[in-house]
Length: 227
Length: 227
Image 1 (cartoon, helix red, strand yellow):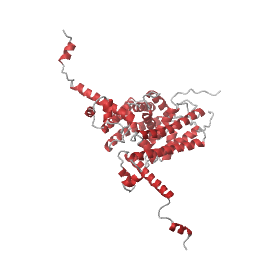
Image 2 (spheres, helix red, strand yellow):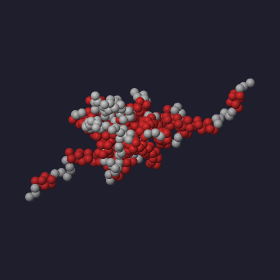
Image 3 (cartoon, rainbow over the protein chains, first blue to last red):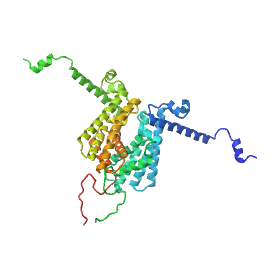
């Protein structure tokens, strides 16, 4: 006698349940976006066609069109996914609380991590330039939200005394610039892993490039009397 | 009797001398490139047409075509002018010599200054993405030259003891990233002048964002005995 599990299986419809179908569709749609992001990052947005995307996935162009409307829409979604990911990470850090400097460092890590991923690289390498104005505006709004969080964290860091007095707007731009640039030069087959890049990059931004004989402010120094 | 100057003027050809004509052509060609760069930076490369460029200059599209071949060629030249300007500035600093840290700071100032100008902004806001592969390669070669100079200067700074030990490649990327980003967010009608931005930005990169009670390494500290 067949086991109950087999009976259940044999009497079920040859079509997947609606929930699973939606999940499958989402999975495939995501694969289309990811393949597109990789191609945009490798070849540039203009040099990439929907045919290229279909070819990379071993499917036909109509199959790609089943999941996405246009190259513009793909780019919009790739960039949105990355910015949403960044914002969600920052929100989580903010909710967990702690000192401003620790939160800032955690947010810098999130930023650095996202720009070394396919979708995040798209934000930096392609950006919103190819998109029509209303879509550009939407992406700029998301970016402004992230920038605002960095400014607030920097202002809080100055207030708590962990950061040197500065113009938070200016400092946020410099940090975001250096971290964003990682998405331009990072190569998955390069010498450094994303974590090593984040470690070294964040250290450089926090401490600066100048040599200082004294230990950094983040490390406790052991005072010694001369002699 | 007319003065010799007037006689000379009245007997000269109504056509400008060849040298002056070439100079005039160069001047007008440059005006076309500059107007194009401004429009690319304001609206994006794709949203800008040759008609828009002609309109901005109050001339016809055929007039624009007399000076340039295509939008691609305009972008290539805009980016090349900026990169050549940067390279020439760096060469001058290198030729003048001095400590590595002073040379690095001077080169950072040049970089920051170029990316707040129309052509330099184009390098950062538009980049080479819209261009065909051979042109992309040419621009990347120019960029790699500038990057190489920054790496060498940083390595020299570490060797002379003015910079903290670091991976010069990584540090050059972080500095160039933060400075490049200025070209993205700088607004000619904003709060800060390009000089103020360079001052504050370079200070942040040299000293880092962390608060340090001790004076910076670039300023001579007066040692005091306790008590």
